[in-house]
Length: 392
Image (cartoon, rainbow, N blue to C red; front, side, top):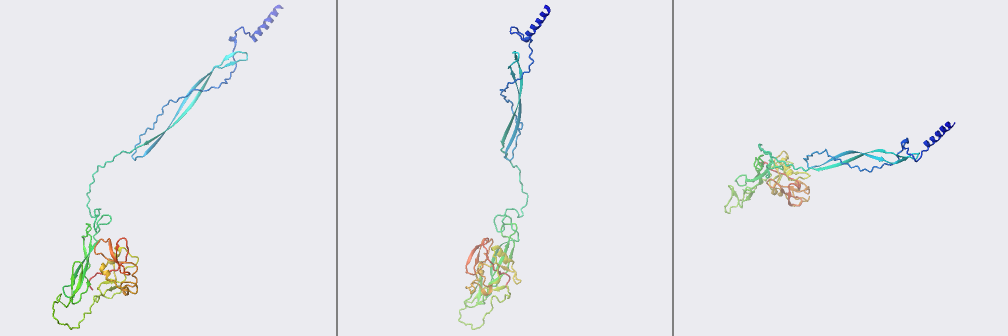
């Protein structure tokens, strides 16, 4: 009986000590922590990541600028740095039995830093090239009048080349008497000069117009001329053998002979022309029409004119043109109104100065009777041409 009681007591008290341990005994070797600890700490990464990478611009191109431009190169480099931080948590976890456990956690913090640099490389290239022409130019050509070597002269055109041999570069007037006899008429001749095609001078061919009568001398007159004009000189008495008589005898010629011939007797009566009985000049009746022209077109019109089948015409000299002036007529004009009509008020009429080139020329206004000088290139005027062919 006692034996069973002892066994029971041992069992009872032994279990109580196992369940309620005493503080007087170290039993940590018997404790096993089977708890699941939860780490509630907040880990703060206080590490400063320093990017020690050196960015190398691999676009180190050498720009060769041949135009003196400004070139801009843009390089973009991307660096990725990975830092690993280890945090240790030494917090104390308490179990339900009053024991204190040390929980060591290892946290791995992986940061990925992306460093993006944009490098702008602006290069200004200066072209310092010096071009040296070491070539030797040799002119083996032969000038034929088309090169720009004609600068001054009537046979130079606007671009410096020689004018062709068909270009009229001047005109001269010669004076002469029809003969040395009494009553010989005073005459003149126009000669047109042309370029040679190889010179700036007016030294090519010539084309004479033929002699024309400028004044008809009576039977008791003699013809005289010089380099500027030809004219008739009336004798105080009679003319014999081409000279005025010097006979001072008081003989009186009682003959009733009268010379009724006139300077226009031989000129045909054609509707498009008119012979001035005071001078013997033959004129076109119509004249140029409006609009008026500058000097050169007006001159060319006379040269090309054909009236009643007659093609020998030219522009008149200023004296010839002025010979058409008359006292003011009833129609308001100062010319032969019965011949030329009333249309004198439109414009002046050009004259030929007698030499080329012609920067300016004189013109006659047949409404006012005035003679004016006009620019040959900027002013417009009309034209009336005079016959320059052989005598009728």
